[in-house]
Length: 268
Image 1 (cartoon, rainbow, N blue to C red):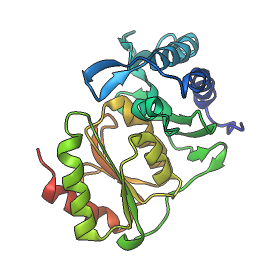
Image 2: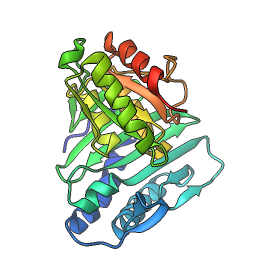
Image 3: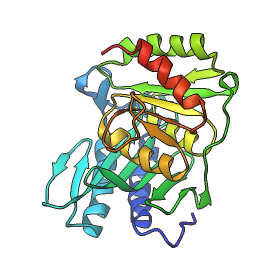
Image 4: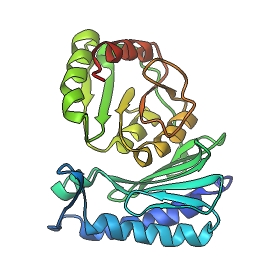
């Protein structure tokens, strides 16, 4: 897989993601025990844990001075202004259900600003990645959001945290259909995968309503470098890449229309 030579962090991130991806592929389709975390819908498997172990072994060797925040192990603090954020398997429910729509996320934060991010689809060997000011890419080819502004031709993804998904999903998606007459509202249980589709022009927008930070920070830099518009629910430009309630879109007039509908119906 070709990686643009100007990338500083992505080659190591891709090596780590592929190490995790090899493990995930080996477990895919097998019956694995699930271990509940915060709820019955929020769980881990041995694939999540072993993928993370393989990823962290490479990242910690390459960047021993950086802090690390990983989904299964938690925080490793080294007093650095830089933090590597790792989600070893985004879309575990899909993975366990035999649905090949899940990703591995690795992001580097400086403070609360993402400066490098990679989202890797292990089942199709697709790597979306970006570094600050260097553009966004899919397997070495530049990607860009589309310019669709007609709602009836637009598709939007909606994803939310485990605590509020059931409350929000039906209300928000119904409002978007009724108010904007969107072509499609998706909920694929892998927000990172859908954010990549926005970045490469296949979807027009994604609403993230309260996922964990490790689920979204890679999406922010890849979307931003691909030309996406990212705001909070009030329409303010995103200043904190760890914020988990936001809209990412192709930046056309659809953005404000989606925000308006979302604000009207979103439950606190």
